[in-house]
Length: 355
Ligand code: TXA
Ligand code: MG
Image (cartoon, rainbow, N blue to C red; front, side):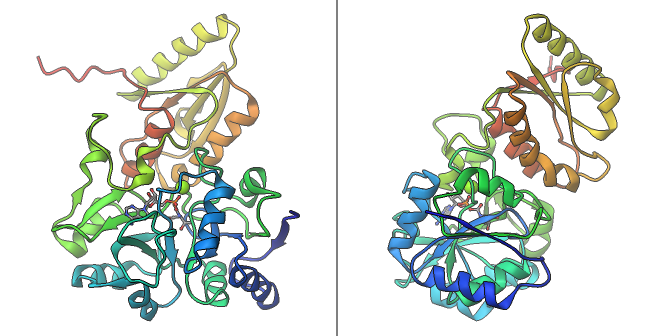
């Protein structure tokens, strides 16, 4: 299949091209498009055949449900029922935006889209191109991140082209996304709201609206028998081809440990990648050093994390040592993705011993 690439400025969705993309979706085809978080791979959420195509194009297990994207608040009741008042409060505050809510599904949403679950994930994105496209497609677009299953989520159209070119009808290119990490997922089907995936909206921001909120135990406890509730969070994910090790602790100790680990591997003749913050760039004289962003503004780290993980693949490094980024407002989301990319391979440089 030939994939058509369409350029579109974020704030100027081109009505004719959007119409064309909408027609593709209505007829069961797939279109990748930008959102404020990451690029999505869209199909008609109400068409089981389109959902099957999404799983096939991504190489994704079909028990991993898709998010249904809407573009109007009144469309929520079409796909979700018994919506609790807390969910409406949260939507009122953060929709359109980087928030996905898990609710009870209506019969309108096929089980192919929900991975066989009686619940549905719903999101109302803020990106103007995404909103125009959803509208043109009839209002309900199923969209996982537009990457091959297992790879880092795409934050630029080039990443989508690398992963999905030839497998889908169209890719809309609106340049780099704004946030860079996928939406925060909050589950409203339990007694208390539960965060299933951290994102730009952090625990504090959710608590301000909801009062009590829990973190999914499967995200916190490093025990292979405790599974995260979002099916997608249990898979190995975001992983670069090279082995990735995170070094955690006090800044100077981390830098010196990464230097010595890198020297050791370089002496063995390996290509070594180092993932660090702008502030510590000068601490690393050797290796393929890549700056992900600034600690002083950790939104820049979130924005570039997936791009940098992909860049290490292109460099062909054998092993990557990364600093930890566990102090800012987005640290929960950043460390969730980085830790998964590292397969939970973390070295604590400053021993947090209790004795
Ligand atoms: O920012 C985002 O959310 C992006 C953009 C494109 O909107 N989408 C995205 O979709 O990240 P995806 O498919 O890559 O991740 C969706 C996550 C998966 O971990 C999936 O298991 C979980 O949401 N999920 C979907 N429906 C669910 C449900 N009914 N119950 C629990 N988890 C669900
Ligand atoms: Mg994904």
